[in-house]
Length: 187
Length: 109
Image 1 (tube, helix red, strand yellow):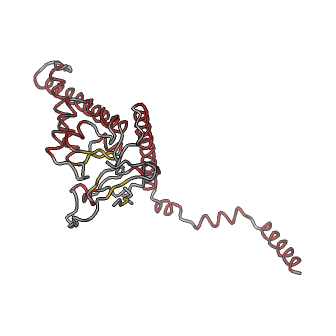
Image 2 (image 1 turned 180 degrees about the vertical axis):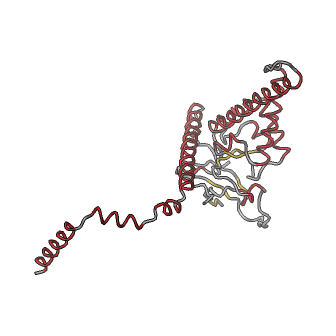
Image 3 (image 1 turned 120 degrees about the horizontal axis):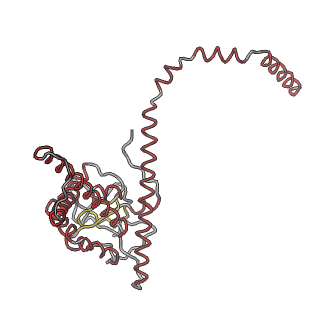
């Protein structure tokens, strides 16, 4: 069976590898947050029941204090986003066909992914800048020199490991991608 | 001459077919086919799996394309509100091999 993902949408095909817009990114981020919240709620229920089974006569689901909830969700979100961005992509971005890469297209390393996750988990509205920015860059992209691109096809391991080791002559011109329908302003 | 021969041939064929007991012919042919073996050779699970995966991928692509359209629409709306005349720059300076396979590269020197 072929593993190649054939893109059926013409516009989708044209925009692959270009900067993703605000709506897709917001939906992907929202999906990630909802996913983390679901995992947290399930974990709290399981831990609570396990605790009662071991140390209590009755079983009930305890509600942790708000500050603890917020702290644990924040930590979980940072870990999840860091793991997703440094190893491939988060589930939300996988669903929406997006990928976070460095401004030169190479994959994110752990530290950059971690600090980006710290910023995004702490201050969600950073993404709002992408709505007005001329290059669809959120504050997190400006701060950490990252780009969120449309990338519907799953990447091969060759891409996950970064650029190939084939030497490239320095004089070779950079390659830009653009669809025929999207006009370009070169900065 | 040829028309007359064709007409006679047609009549003969129709007559022979009318004389045949079609039910018996079908029963005879079907009896020769080993239906369980034929069914065993059809990869039903594979057919179902591939068609389901195809449907899922198509639905996912459609929703992604819808969001993509909303991305472009919202960008145009904001640009119009901000009275920008030049469109957005969506290009990424890929360093060669890190570029997604799906992107259609266009070299701009």
